[in-house]
Amino acid sequence: EALRKRIAELEALLKQKEKELEAARKREKELLEQLATQETVFRIQLQELGQFIKEMKQREQVREKQQVEAYHKLLKEREARIAKDKERKRKSGLNQTRTKDGKIALDAVDIDAQRMALEQFQRRKSQQGQPPPPAGPAPNKGKYSGKGNPLLNDDVIPSGKGGGGKPAFDKKTEAVRTKFGNEKIITTWYYTGKDRKIHEVILRHNTRTGKDMKSKRVIVVDGKVRYAEKSKETHFIIKNGKDQLKLNISLNNSQVKGFAYQLFINDVSFTQLHNNYLNKIAGN
Image (cartoon, rainbow, N blue to C red):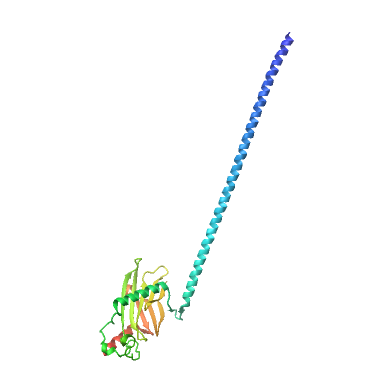
């Protein structure tokens, strides 16, 4: 009887252990399933991260490509501007001849500035009707109606030719403000040339210079711009019809703003020609 009782106890214990084993197997299966699920999620996350990194690299490559293209585009535009400036300077240089003493002979430049100067010249002539009268005593009209040009010692002017045989002579200087607030000296000469016509010469000099000592200098002859550059040139030679004009800019503390402006016509100073002109007026 005791043996049977012992066998029953062992069978009950075995059943209990089998249940525990079944529960452990079930728990193991659940853990394996959870692990498989987590691994799947992790793999999915890795795939997503890899795809994101790939997209970022593609975007970076596109951005770098765009930056390179923009840089090359800017380089091409800059090279085109430089080539255009060189071509403009080369064409402008065809109209300039540098002499042995470093002076510059100039032809017409800067079409827009020339047009504006010509309009201003024509407007001034229409307002004034004629150039300003010569400095000094007014000449006797009757005495000069058949005389030659006392300014340039020309031949006798036949009656009825250009200007009526009456030479004109004058000079004026004024200081004006530019649109940038700088000061600009404008010197204007009037003279009668060998062609027996009255001519106007204007020199505009911006007195403010930069570190390179350059400033805007403009020369207008009979309404045409013959020079318009930002430079430090001080000697200019211009051919105007039968006359050769030389203009000089020099430092002189006794003159306007420390600068003196001289004009030579056919290698004779304007001051000397002016004196000759006045002497001929006085002698007649």
